[in-house]
Length: 178
Length: 271
Image (cartoon, rainbow over all chains, first blue to last red; front, side, top):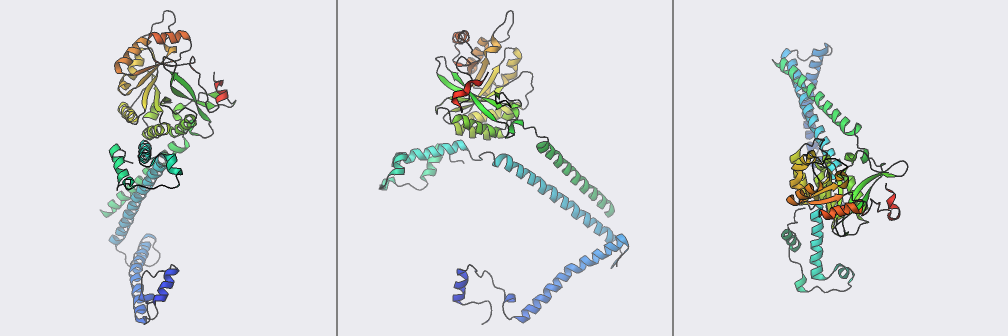
């Protein structure tokens, strides 16, 4: 059967080349001429429903403004409605522009003056967390020098860490907060 | 009706855009073009010089960092516009000093301006500085002038309280001998750990009247459980006076001049 279906070997080949088939569409497969003609026609018609009103409104408004070109309609209300909607869109665009520019300024300023200049975690807690873990490991496995240089070490069953043991240590010392 | 609405909306749009761009332009001008961050510029070479503080037995208890700037002739001078020193730069200046000091729980004092203490970076500064100089203890010194106007008292007290919660200490530098000097700092005392008095302010010339003498400051400090440090101790006579008044924390040329410890051999060029 022709179509999007591929053999197991072809599939393996594609996966190997990192060309995974992520979706199927009969429109782009071989054959299916009825589908292709119907969908192309529908797409063109749909686009026309967008373009035609724009052209009609555009030309008529252009005629109302300049007196040149071709007017499909000449109603006074129509013209003032186009003007109103135009200004409304302009207004909304201005609000969106001001909002985005302001947010960008705030964001850049915050990045430059805060995030890139200062540690945003609490360095004092960080320090005592390091010390807490260091003390804990020293008590359980020996000091840092020993731990880092020992060649063979057998961990006794009672030396194993329990679930969340380090987190619990932090919580005890109230330094869990980063 | 619709026409009127259109006109109003159009004007509103134009005014909105104009106002926001003028605001942005002013903001940009203030923060970038007219910036006066003299000490923020990289070409200004800055360094902390170190002066010792000792107790009554002559043992070192702490250090004060004194900011110096290299001038054109290569001399290290006290820079102007101290308030423009960015707090972030202080961290790296402290790093340069801390590496050369013994790692013992002494105090390490730096001078800040009022504006720096009430700035939003202060909180970040204190906890970062304190974490980098541990086991030393950060002391923030502030000189208060009775003639200047200090605003945002509550913000100041809140910031200092937070700094003290991080383990730093607050010192009022160079208290004076007039009643106005006391009035100017009285509201800070609840959040103050140390008061520093300079000998220079309290040496009487003939017939001069001092509203407040050293004895007064010593009593006040004892009352409020504040540490009193006598600065500018220059000779044995000053040291005798300190002993007489039971002042245990001393600083001055008698115990050591400000030195550049990153160049230990030639550190005493200072006047």
